[in-house]
Image 1 (cartoon, helix red, strand yellow):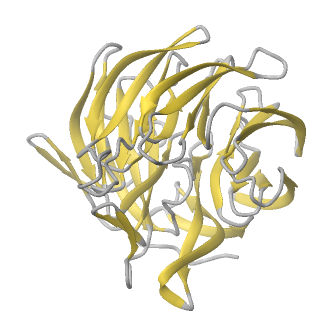
Image 2 (cartoon, rainbow, N blue to C red; image 1 turned 180 degrees about the vertical axis):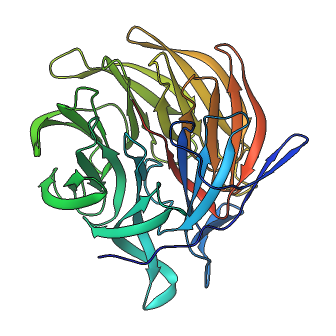
Length: 392
């Protein structure tokens, strides 16, 4: 279904001693585009998630991460959701379009509740101004979405019905061509990530605690029935550009216990979990650096709990781990905004953006291989819920 173009509103990038107003999109040759999906339906008030009455539209903030400091280019209204992993956004390899999935929406029968959604929106990044050009209905509560390395295929993990949707891509047109079931409807597919050769994809399943291995041959996608078990509620997953390892977060039971991040050896057949490290309360997002040498993890760290809770902290964390063969070694960490979600890297691996749902902002961090420091903040018009760049 086609929908009308949306007007982009201005935003402000707040950095030390500097204020930058949003500008028109620059040439893709000069930019590295990051897209932050922002949810206006849900807020956290002293540890309790509440539905906003008559909320402003959800939206996406478009950012140039290829300049220093990163520059906000504009916003476009688009359905989004904090429910599900922060890989609810995907960008085509040529940066022509971005995809945003919405796991929930306001209940038409009761505006004080949310219900599952099934929408995937297509944003034309080359339009002036960028605009939502199409909406595709996929499965129930779509959570994670990824392009294949060649940009010709899209997979969507549908958390609400235990499936993965398969879509072909021709230019800026997406066509739903199939769906595969993974376990039962409660298996909870959260995110799906392609290997760099495009021949496999890994799917995290937080409902039954498995990571599935899919085979990919053109538009033919099949469940190999091979799976791994890492920890409780596997969630976000990111695969190295080298194709040798993947890293995933395990969210645990959400009771204030220390949770874990796991490393998968993709050279094994089938792939296997070979290392696990404790990281603190509720690791959310995981993103490998462009060269595959490090992985960044967002940790909620009790920041979304009531202030009286024994596990409460007034900040989230970003932790960067070095990949040492098939082992994870902590390189650096930094305090960031609360209720952390997605995290992305600049192409040179020196700048990161980390989302804070609680603060409606993105922390800008610098990384030199040893130290990780917050150097600025980007305010966004909604709870920062999901974020991606092109992953190569």
